[in-house]
Image (cartoon, rainbow, N blue to C red; front, side, top):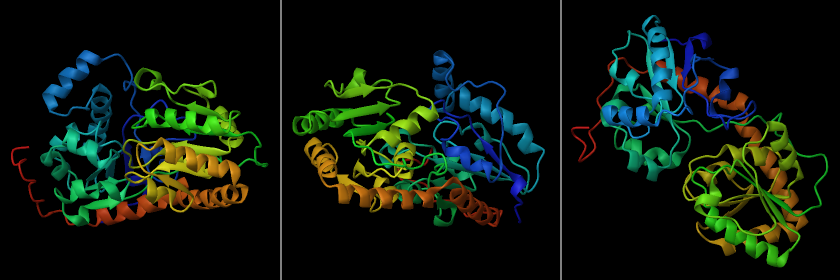
Length: 361
């Protein structure tokens, strides 16, 4: 089965914190078409409907937004032949299409983003996974969960991408001791807050600018006059702050991949990050890794970069070089290769072994 570029269709609504130059699905600019949903319902106040839908489907995180995306894709899918449909967020937007018989020649694949620990908690049913022709992961750290449920030839890893033309290094290295962190999903704000306190003891003028942190103060405040919490910001504001920072700091509780991490790397920032999940896969040698939950290690790494200009410059150059490997164009080519392999899979797939204890899933 061959698969022309115009026979790939992406299913799923965007997240509102993914702006014009960021978001998992932006590789579609170079391959495939994103099926638009007439009503964006991912963030509408449908709490009661989401609870009912989760109960009916047995999918804890499946909600109205995901259902609408699948409903819009279904008639399109049923009219097609020799096409591939890619559900962008398998944890939240995949259920209906897994229960509908597909025309011969139509392939269905979903990407899963959550860390291994979260996948074990939400427990995507084996029946749904077996309905997919393949799964795409964003990190090798997720593979153990799926290897217990699917044949190895149906598991692929394709990383997140970054707009390396928009997110680019500043022309001059900033002199101010400014750190930046971006995002809140699975972030460890308690460790970050303690690290900031330690950093400012050595460098009282140091500051931390945190973007996309809408709720950290409700969970674990980051105290100190040197901390500025920002909610949603424009792409231009975000770029300006990346280019004004000396160091990017990311403290995670768990992680597979991080758009903020890639953006910071694309801006040529040396990175300090927690050594969990897929973070080392993305960072490589372009930063300093710290044990999880260790504010002293994070603070020491940041102050080391403040004091060692040669090291900071070297890591920044390595970060930019490595980020180019994740440019959306590169990621689109990798997706195209995976789509071709999925299209070539035999129509009659061997059934995956059932996970122990989930025979009735």
